[in-house]
Image (tube, rainbow, N blue to C red):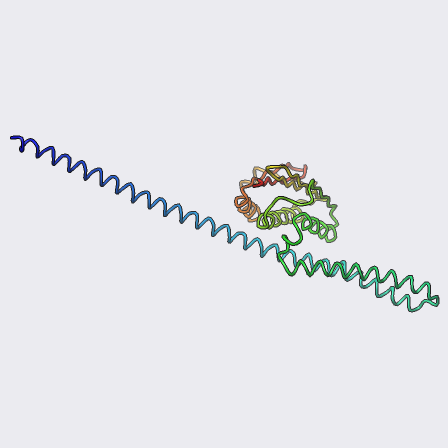
Length: 260
């Protein structure tokens, strides 16, 4: 009798144990699948990040070549042209004192040209932004814009060096170039200002123009490739973007980058 009563208990216990084992097994399988999915998502995110950084590096290097070409053509080339004319002038001088004065001035100009060429060679021999520094890179970009477009360009920064890693500087450099190019193409501005404010926990980049402005809501509804690229790079930097603008009121684009 006792044996008969014990059988249902054993069967129930066995079924309960099987159910419990099945639940645990299912939980482990689901957990491992989630781990694999999470790892795959991390790997895909890292791939996208590295791909974006590589693409950005190529874009920055292309822009750097353009800046170097400008420096050689419109700066060093002009200096060497002046030196040539000065030396020809010195050869025509009857007074040795006057000739020596012209030659001395020519030597100073040649020294300047040699220094500029040395700086350019350093840029070409290494990573442009990390070698030059982001602040100097932006200054050169604005000088290039000033010389080629006649736009008034102003720059302000409360620190000489920025607390950013080389990869971060690369991304911010390209973002700044993208924003400046948009101003040149679309804003119809006469003046640009780039202001950088560094604090303990973040850096604010504000790029302002006095152009025709824009409808921000319309821009956000119909983002072009340029703004899509900006957002992709900001995502890597864990930063944010704010657009302040109105029709006829110019535009200010603000990037906020956290300092880690």
